Image 1 (cartoon, helix red, strand yellow):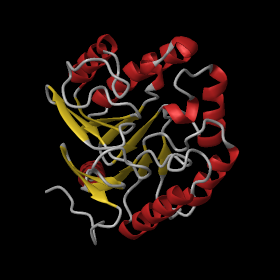
Image 2: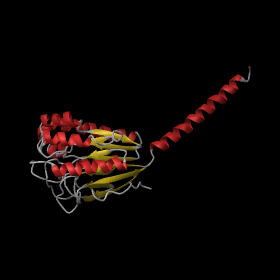
Image 3: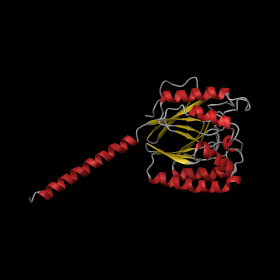
Image 4: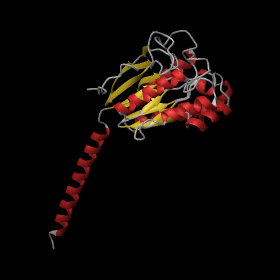
Length: 291
């Protein structure tokens, strides 16, 4: 009888060790390498000035088929899902094709200027929310913290200032939460690029105004953000602001430069991020994971 307390202590200690080991294994599994796909600007209606969306259908169906074959951890589509804001036929065709994505692969939709107009009002945001879901949210996956933003709140907030202010408060809280959670990598996803090549480049249709740009790039730098992935430009562009890489991805839909229609494969291993853009006709047999 007098040995029971000692035995109980040994059992408790063994149980603690087993749970500790299990927890370590679990954390190791959670942070295993993975990849996802960024598509952008399928923009149904753009090829033929809203007369039809034959080419957009061809491209997007091909992109979804390739995504199903590669089977990424998720697909994120960074805006301009359609060309004419609120167009029911364009929205229906986009939804019809994206529904072909394997149901085990999550897909995330981001608002672009052609989804909510260049100068959005609350009703435009409500329309996007109704058709595609929230316009800002987080993706927590295998140690990576993805923060999805509505870049129209930075580019042209005048008609939606209350919503822009709400996103700003939410964003700052999410960045604090990501740091508190010990995220190995913090990524930002949005439609507009903060800049294309140089963080000090002049204001342009394809970037976000310098004063706003500096404010948020400083916030991202202080918060440990490593990459921002965007679209809107309809071609590829790259630049760096300190340790932050600004990645602008070419379109699934109509190109506006030399880069062909395609999508980007992003690979994550701990805090290492690698990525490559592929022509829709040259998608690899399998994704290469970061080492």
